[in-house]
Amino acid sequence: MKKVELLAPAGDLEKLKIAVEYGADAVYFGGEMFSLRAGAGNMTADEMREGTAYAHSRGVRCHLALNVYAHNEDIAPLRSYLKEIRAIPVDAYIVSDPAVMQLLRAEIPDAEIHLSTQANTTNYLTANYWREQGVKRLVLARELSLDEIREIRANLPEDTELEAFVHGAMCISYSGRCLLSNFMTGRDANRGACAHPCRYKYRVEEEKRPGEYWPVEEDDRGTYIFNSKDLCMLEHLPELIEAGIDSFKIEGRMKSIFYIAHVIKAYRTALDAYYKDPEGYRYDPAWAEEMCKASHRDFTTGFYFRKPDSGAQEYSSSSYIRDYAFTGLVKNYDPATGIAVVEQRNKMDIGDTIEVFGPDGAAFTQKLDYMSDEEGNAVSSAPHPQQILQIKMAQPVAEMYMLRKEK
Image (cartoon, rainbow, N blue to C red; front, side):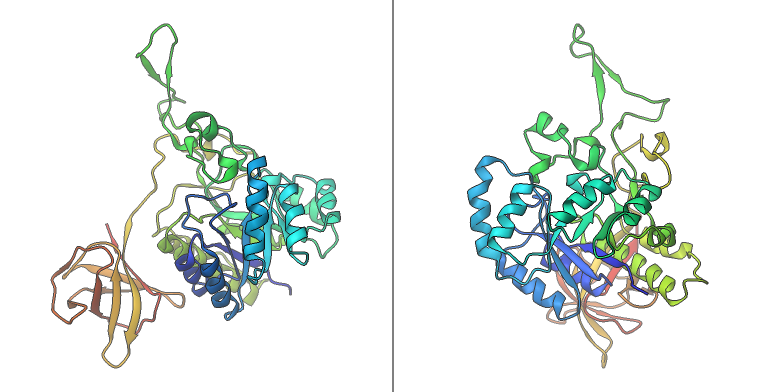
């Protein structure tokens, strides 16, 4: 059975490594220019070389986002940038603009091209058009239902792949092609600088009554009229696989390593359970319970089963739900002493109850009863960001395990 690819966001080199270790089959990232997440850490050419080497050594593919819509002033710098990076062994390039595709073919003739969701592929005729232009994979528009995806799959050759978002933030505009940010802040969402005005709180001002404001309300729930819930399809993986999707994409290049670890592990665990026994597969709610210990919004299934109604919107707040704090990242572990070297990420104190989790197995809970600084001096509190600590662990751990505590 051909297995679906789990594609993880990698906003910087650290996130790439976390995504790989927590179960991604492939990662996607941007360079310093020409991707649609200018606010992510992104990677220099040297970091991309290191990241691709790290991923490839573990059998994980690397996709580079070049999915801006280029303006005239971008053409010459883009051509130079492609010359700079063409020797980096990227497995695929994510593109939306035909001009970028043309330049990519000129500078990297053997490039595997994936068509970005920004290109709005919503039917099989458009899908076949792009296939004829040499596109290997189509990242489908987010406005498609599963029935529409099945029909596209049925009308495409088998060697043309389909990728679809299964988890993460939903843009209020058509496949993310939003003008609100440009209009309100001068930051162009289609060139990677979105200010996320869909998350703003809105009020009405009547032009002849300046300074008098009325909340924009649907019932009494609030004023976040563009604020979508996040997509989550963890409970519906068999339906997605049956529809013919080849790659499950997780949104989140600007999210934390804590978020990436939880989400990728949840989907990896579910997919492995499915492929171990497709006929006997049963969704386990514990997967979502564990995943939601990272920050998240309430969830929706987007357009997959029906057109979203008011239930897909969050009217009370644009904030994330944060029930747990990410307190530390394991950098090293000595099995002889049971001591882990931990980089602090949020304040910890002796006496705290912490949970420890990693790529494999279940999390475990322990009381924090011994902690020292880097020199071995006992400390009762760790308030300093990225402070290096030594912590006695109740069970064996490894590099890239994480510590969390309930708020």
